Image (cartoon, rainbow, N blue to C red; front, side):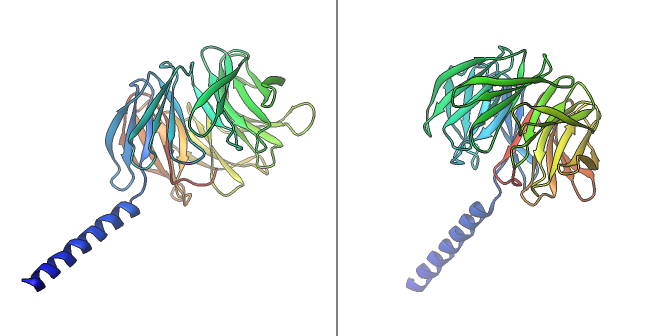
Length: 327
């Protein structure tokens, strides 16, 4: 009886070990925001199935990871709320209310500020972040329809595109005042900054190009337009420090840009209005929301083909996962 009991205990411990190993080895989920359904699709990257949908506030558009990597923050633009999710388990942690029109969001690299673009209300908001709570410090009036944000590596300047007034605006973070503004091409959307903080890449959704700005001097200057495809919109770094992906929402394609030569080096066809993107940790896959098709499309960067699609909700927008290529 003692031998049988010992054996049964060993088997149970072995099973527990395997189970724990499976949990530890499992990849974190992918999150896709369904803007017109006020929820988030949770996708298992092992089975490529939608495991759940998490209710949020109205019109979730973008999401961002807290500096400590403990929470994914979903910005619910029409709900005036933030939904905090566990990036590993997809459990709802809390809801923060009274955040006015949080369309786009970013943390400063020094982790002191949380900044949002109020897309429909024409202002950029500065919140003090203490690692847990947010306190509104300043609301900066801008031009028409602030869209996307980018913050330099030194946490000194936040840049915001003005979607309906065709401008790029720079705001000093220390004083929360506008430093300068410059005209852009039609309907600027996402922004991506070079690692040396000297250049900004701006997607022109109302055009077919990415506009490059030199912001290293006292005055900004437009130095190049890179033709990518109609509806150039959102960016994601390829992870190698040199290349940048841009989704061309109208052209139904993704372009890969060499940031040193300002050339398109590869293109990938993607159906359904490709929008926000994420890149797998090894750089092999691009996860992109096909905005008009209610799909998450997965692109193999070696074969240049869409290798699978997962059905999600209406108007999928932001995409995020904890295991991603360096940004």
